[in-house]
Image (cartoon, rainbow, N blue to C red; front, side, top):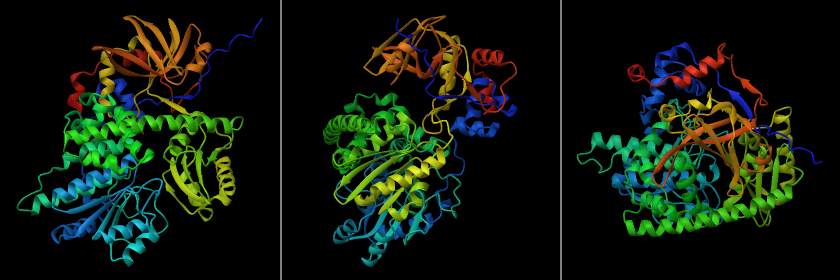
Amino acid sequence: MPNPVPPAAPRARWRLSPPPSPALDALGDPLLARALAARGVTELDGAAAFLGRSVGDDNPFRLTDMDRAVTRLRRAISGGERIAVYGDYDADGVTGTALLTTALRALGGDVLPHLPHRERDGYGVHTAALDRLAKHGVRLIVTVDCGVRAAEPLLHARALGLDVIVTDHHALPDALPAAVAVVNPRRADDGYGFHEFAGVGLAYKLAQALLRVAARTSARPAALHETDLLDLAAIGTVADVVPLVGENRMLVQGGLERIRAGARPGVAALCEAGGFEAATMTARGIAFGLGPRLNAAGRMGDATMALTLLLSDEDGEARRLAAQLEHMNRERRAATDVALEAAHADLAGRTDAPFLAWASPDVGLGVIGLVAGQLAQAHYRPAAVFRIEGDTARASLRSIAEFNVVEALDRIAPLLERHGGHARAGGLTVRTDRLDEVVDALTRLADDALRGADLRPVLDIDAELPLTAVNDDLYRRLQALEPFGEANPSPLILSRDVPVASKRIVGERHLKLIVPTARGSMEAMAFGHGDRLAGIGERIDVVYGVRERVWRGERSLELDVQDFAAAGTARVQVDGHAPADGGRVGDRIAGMGAPDVVAASI
């Protein structure tokens, strides 16, 4: 007799958020209070700011060196100097370059946007590009999403007689580069108080400063308002996966309103080509729809195509470019799948190592970051994918919460030619003859950092509720926390002992469940969990988000399943102390709407 299939075990660690502080009782909505507490909001004024997406004092001149940057740019504009906006080839850099170019041109600037080519140039500021810009008459360069680690190229710029303003959100080197201004909220002497901007967010703050000064001082203000730029700011902010907290939430919310209005031809065409409804665009739609398509230009060809799309004022040109990006995005998906299969084949039997590394001369440079990200996500380990190019190799790294990749790269800097990045994502260039040494060093650092850790992802659960609580009112209440993204994920609910009416595989890798409720059946989609079909019994404990589904004009709610386990088998970690009346608190959360006192309190 064959062995029975073991019951489903959870793939992640389940962690229930702590109860909210009594101060949030005034909201009149225990569910909203728990969700806010899970996001670090403990007081009523903080809840008001979060729900109202208020940023308070957004004066851009509180950013260190902003005054110097604005002064130099205004002098360049008034003097007719040619200005180059030097960005990066990813969606953050492209949108930031488009945003700042648009603002400077509206102010009368002679602007030449420039993006490096991923294959020919690589990331960052390069001396050859500076030489070309100088020959084109450029006298002032503003970087977007790069430059803070470009010490030698900026010295070269000075020798050419070029002034440089750096706007960059990446981790700082030991010493700042020589520049007219270095606008980076991570500076120790920065007084802004919010340091989670993407590159496009800093470009927006610079444009905001310029436009506000112009509005006060010019007899004829620019025919552009700072809010006209929010769609670009939103796309780059979401695409770069920076935390959607603080001012970033305001940027994204305002940008979504602009996208929904169809104000920019390039963005409207991108939505149309991808089959997205601009009028209902969400942050998730940016993350999985618009962002990847803009990134496809730099990954599979030249990012200048995406920049031209965003700068276009002509509907026909925008549609033509958007169609090309759609084709590139399909090529990008295919190339990623091929490389990922090769990486998994090479790493077979070794994916429990503390650090995953794969190197190949055949992997496309444009997809190494995507493959590294999927390896890190699939195995919950930091991962690096190297493209070998003769005597050198370039790599993208993706990490997990427990391992700061840019700190690790800083520690092995003597082995590297170049490096940089964030806590969870980085890049490096290394001589091929030192590649093994670099991988060994990163493996040792990862082993030290991760030894003894439970290397499964964590699911932070906002509330435990019976499945019967899921209805339109609950969905509406949770939407007050939009826009969702990094550090502000869509709320997760745990429901126990849920009956499973049916189960099947869809699209080869995904799992579709039907769960009965008091009002009829509900669909539950578990993306990427198709291999767990056999382990599902008659009843499960399930962690899920709730989302709206529209099909052929019919609207319904469905469960976005993140993890599940056989009923009664999953261990739930509780941050803080569990409420003494656990089940009754769940019933109270479920049954309570969002009364008028909520609006009055915030």
